[in-house]
Amino acid sequence: MVEKKQRLLALDVLRGATIAAMILVNNPGSWSHVYAPLLHAEWNGWTFTDLIFPFFLFIVGVSIVLALASKMDDPLLRRSLYKKIVRRTLILFGLGLFLSGFPYFNLSTLRIPGVLQRIAVCYFFAALLFLHADTKKMWGITLALLFGYWALMVWYPVPGLGAGSLEKGANFAAWVDSLVLKGHMWSATKTWDPEGIVSTLPALATTLLGVFTGKLLRAGLSAEEKTLRLFVYGNFLLLTGMIWSVWLPINKSIWTSSYAVFMSGMAMVVLGMLTWWIDIRGERRLTRPFVVYGMNAITVFVLSGVVGRLLYLIRFDLDGKSVTLKGWLYHLLFTSWLSPYNASLAYALCWVALSYLLMKWMYNKGIFLKV
Image 1 (cartoon, helix red, strand yellow):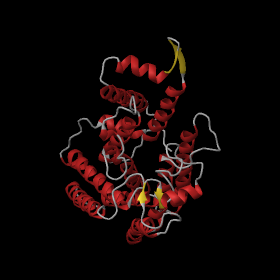
Image 2 (cartoon, one colour; image 1 turned 90 degrees about the vertical axis):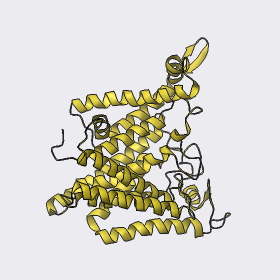
Image 3 (cartoon, rainbow, N blue to C red; image 1 turned 60 degrees about the vertical axis):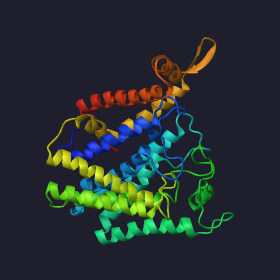
Image 4 (spheres, rainbow, N blue to C red; image 1 turned 90 degrees about the horizontal axis):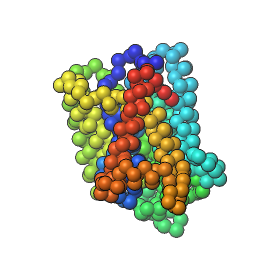
């Protein structure tokens, strides 16, 4: 059913652009031939790809305010909010576990953390804090998460390593993951997880910075005043993150506090640009595709993960060789006439386009699968 309430178009566009970017970077034709901006930074630093996940958490934070604020003062409605929050959390976490296990569901090695699992946890705690804590308390919690995580990473003496190591797989966050999640971590590392336990603390701070932004957007301010504040606050966070990175490098894999602050600032600036373009300039051109994507963001993410995996699993014999369906399509449609890097990019862009066509059909039919 189409929602009747007034939506914030700039946020819908940002959500749609973010999920489209996630589909793009998650589905190259070949992982051996990917342009550098479409890969995560090797360790410290950031690329275009490193914007995507924190943008999504930031959007979750903004959306919490827009979805819950009008209902939290009514005692009857407020009670129903708790059920809604728990239900959404469990569905998101369950979908994440489903993607981790699909299609074999080997429980002995099932990856417990993941993208949707982190979104679920951050949504749960951010929503509860929004309902129960005033702005001052939430700022205190946000700062405690950021500085507390920094302190743990640089001061806690990890057995066998000592304090202060921020190296890949050799840091406090990785040590905790190895103790609690042994055998249930990302298959590419096996000894630590980029969506692990301790690094979820600053990820929650990213979500809370989105909550503060949602409160700003609901304030009784003109579009011009909101846009100005988004730019000012966003650039302040960008500058703070860059200065902080001198002592604590910007790093997505362990979600350093400087990374959380810097990326929240970036998201705020981009949202400010969209607010200026859409609400002040009144420009609506080119917004529709992103709105279509954003209205079924979780649906397209899950479907992309399932279909992408099936393309690897479906195999058949071709000229005496066993090939995957993906490999056959990739060679037939792309590598036969494009350079390796452009073929890989073209394959990913086709994923984005085909996903959009499916989401457009759902949008036109009024099908919005909400969790």
